[in-house]
Length: 331
Length: 245
Image (cartoon, rainbow over all chains, first blue to last red; front, side, top):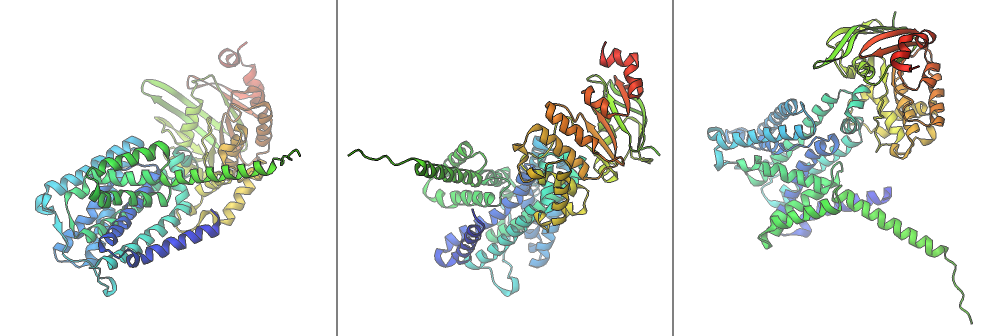
């Protein structure tokens, strides 16, 4: 796509997103859009590890839940939103650092298993440490914040707030991916040994990537509790980690649009399609199987590949037909 | 001052002693060739020098500085660069991006998450200059996977040279190359300035002996012969364990 075309597409997408509550109308669907955006932030955060660092985490729901629980419990204890949210982000960063120190003892399947175990520990704490977390009954969040005095209590205002956070996340990710540090991180994914021999501290690069991912996971966790105004151990469960990982893989790892596309598919399937199809999980499974079978690189890179192939085929046909001489009809 | 000094260096993998009490001194600017049959411990020795492996005992000094406990990622910052026996580059990136990564490795810029790498004009210009040095500037924007094996070998050497090393370790730079490619790489190595000390592992004796000033023969992790080209080739032990009759 040309530079002009790309900017045009971005402008149209921004216009659609900025006007969504006006043309969508129904608050139910506006709330679905908020969910898509907050899960897109979560998926983008996980994509930093899965896509750019080559580190597949199955414990990110644990960090997501740490942020949610920390904020919810602090709010319940009577603290204000600013204190609760700031503390929740700092606590999640501390948890991310512990995750990183333990999980970075390995890469590949080892990293995946350690993060899975750490995520399960957090789920276990949320579920069993009832005196702190209220166990299966969860924790209620009675109010949403009102940044700059703007109430987020209705669907459109919460949507716009989530949209601003989503765009911030997307902008920082885009900057990160193109930066020297982003290049360093991708290098550790592709040739860690070589990167080490070139003078890069591969461990520290991966550690910082986990912290960056942890920060945006915490932000997504805060959006989640303000959206639902409730958190329970289910949020920290393995299924949540797997769901977000599927968003990233289905949409396309190491792309910015991939995790967003994955979030759209999963959230719409869970919330909209499930209203019409009882076995919506089966449909979601079939969709994933189809994506992995026909576009193993994910929906976004796969679609780009198909588009290029179709375009090149069309160009080739055009050149071939132009090169063929026109046969003269005999009288 | 010695460029590289190994003192009673030992390394074992379980019961297998792969490096046995190696003591070696390479002078600044020297071209040293390390030879030995397969399994002699040549690449292990390189891995010990670069810090990829930690020695069980002994010490390593780089220009009189003890680097035995210096982490491997810090050693390039002290002037050490290496190439690998099996090419380990970034096949999905362009040749230019590969060399830029080498330059970035020694720059504090590598930690910067805010600037755009492609807008770093100085870095791009230095990478292009490094490619021009090995005659690959015209391929700078080509994806590495679309280049020949010989060109990839030259990219690897360009990346090492781009870091302006004081000590360059070359692990079988002629392995798998055609006659023409070998000629190109030989010319490239001959053009390395004298302020760079070069230690090279190589099996291809035709090109390697021409390049080397002193030769060290390893056998079962031990230095068994060391001397000038003529001395080592003439030594009966060399014929016995390596060259054959």
